[in-house]
Length: 215
Image (cartoon, rainbow, N blue to C red; front, side):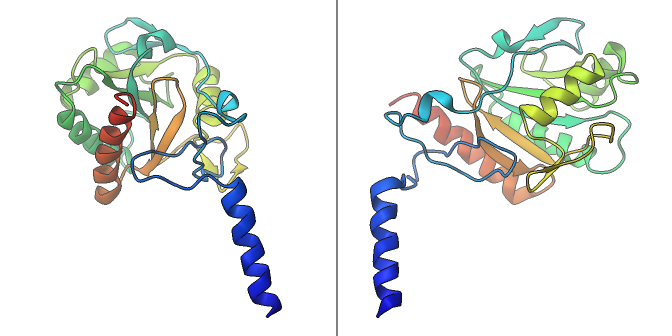
């Protein structure tokens, strides 16, 4: 009997305080634990949701891009390096599949950050982008100061983290994650870039997120 009463009490608290997931709404991710949270627009927490910090990088065309180039856009971000022979080719191949699914949609962009900017020059990134079929202006491969890339990776995208336990700042950064970011630079999805099922889920979630802005 005490167990039943405890369960009833828990459910009452949950219904009074928790936001119930909606199949037509994506959650928010606000910390490195990547625990999905459904936060309603009338909640006090809504205006405090974690956002991607402002940034300035150089893309494969030698153009300076910053967060304003992604205003009013949904985008998918990842971290890679062109000489990677491990997970990067598979991740990039899957990003290309997502690009193909939204190639005619100018509201969906892609942002790949090099984690070896000292090696991945503009010329190297340009050739890499060409080789994987990146659409110019839609899929940006960027380089820049290593400290800036690593800082935004770890503090904004929570890349290279393991269940909330950050690696040492001097360690090499590597992440399998593809990060879905909404029009307000908030994280709305986290996916394993090497997993076909996660890629399909990401494509579906982009469509769900697009509908959110039509309501």
